[in-house]
Structures are given as structure tokens and as C-alpha cells.
Amino acid sequence: MKIFLLGLPGSGKTTLGKKLATTLQLPFVDLDKEIEKTEGKQIREIFAEKKEDYFRQLESSELKKWCARPDDFVMATGGGAPCFFDNIDVINRSGKSIFLDVPASEIVRRMSIGPIEKRPLLAAGGKDGLKDSIEFLRTNRLPYYKKAAITLTGIVISVEEMTDALKK
Image (cartoon, rainbow, N blue to C red):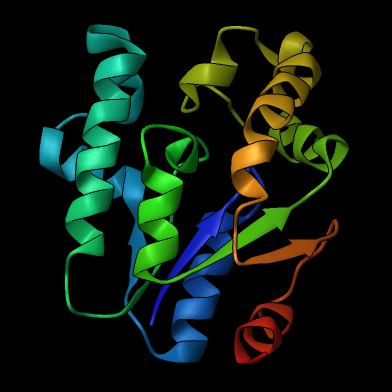
């Protein structure tokens, strides 16, 4: 089974995705890392040099390439991946999607701890504008995230919750 983790930046897609992949004995795929391998550049460089539209096209292409593969995996999508083109529909046709619905206040707390320069959509406003940026993203992306097959809500979401939800 292909499993796709969806959610805002800082919701735990990569951290939980790695743990879930280990538990299910599946490969872990970070969509952003795959884009960086393909382009030979970091995401922030792609945004700076070629802007968001170019990045979203790359992201969609890379996602569709992975969805077409016959093998199973756990994928941490980029936070915006489900929200552009027909990506959420492609994800849902290809496997199970899990929306990690972490409160915006918790995401702001998590992101305030470390550098946000690696997150181009949030870096522009700096840490002072982080709360507003997260809330703006959440408002705009929620309709797409709600199309996920499974929604798990909370400040702390466990691998056990994810595996239980997948079994149902």
C-alpha cells in the first residue's frame, strides 16, 4: 500500500513518516528530498531562482512519477503538494492519505524553535509573522487536506494511531 502523509509544514509528516515506514517495513519517501535530487538544488533555491509556479509543476510531476510506481512506500508530501493541480485526487487514487491535523498554535511553537529559512513560504514573514503565515496556509489548504481518507487530530499523533486507522 502507498501511504501519503498530508499536513502543514511542521505537522510531523517526515518524523512520523519515517517511524511509520519502519513499523510497516516499507521504504520512506520525502517528496521534497526527491525534488531536490531531481533538480540538484534545495527547495529554497528553486523558490528563489524559479519561483513557486515552477516548483509546484516539479512537485506535481515528481508526485505522479512516484504514484505510477508499482512498489509500496510511505511518503511525506510537501505541505502544499495536495493543494495544486489534481494532486489530491492522484494521491487518493494511488493509495491511502492521512491528514495530520495539528493545531496551528502547536506548529508555530515547533517552528519557533528552529530555523525557518528552509521553508520558503514561511521564511519571508520571519518568526514574527509565523503565526499569521501558518493560519493563512491552514485556511487555504484545509479544503484539500479534508479530502484525505484518514484525518488524525492532536498535538501529538502516534504511529500506533496511524496504524490503527489504516487497519480500519
